[in-house]
Length: 47
Image (cartoon, rainbow, N blue to C red):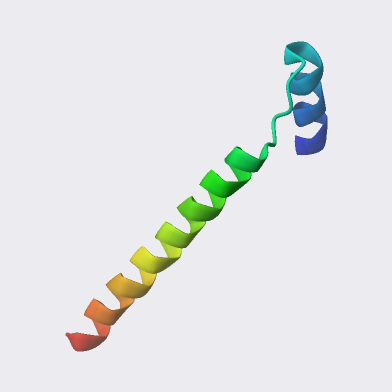
């Protein structure tokens, strides 16, 4: 389903949905989320 949506958007806009920049931004976002979760877990263990 998501693949179809991506293909339709790319056909309409003529531009790729997934780019190297978007992948890098997404990787950074995931890294930030993991780091935040690990940090908050450390606080829970100290209590």
